[in-house]
Length: 155
Image (tube, rainbow, N blue to C red; front, top):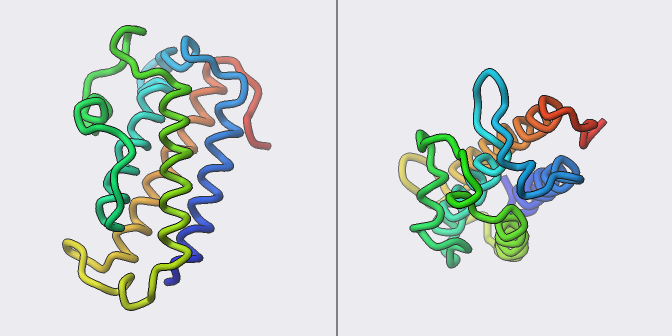
């Protein structure tokens, strides 16, 4: 697996995020889907939180401070108020910073580096798994926007 292939996958998820967030305000992003699930704000924060993991694996600085990102870890309570939620536009900006940093790193990464052990697998496989995780959540954002009564972001 090449770094260019991983970067291409990140380009697809970035495109999807931006299309799915068109017309979504910060206040909209806190709408809880009925009957269950997390709001768009939490899902976007969760994605940025996991971008920090990708950064650490790739040997680059995380984009979001750990304390803020902790609120968006798996299993955290549903986001219910403006006061506890990170600003949606700020999280999108962090995502874009992450996109630039990861894309740059992956454009120059060697096959040898991608094949190095990272936890229970290679760096390439760890990154591929995290990108799949991100893709899964991009789909959730699309569904949540429809539950909110918005037009589809992607058709």
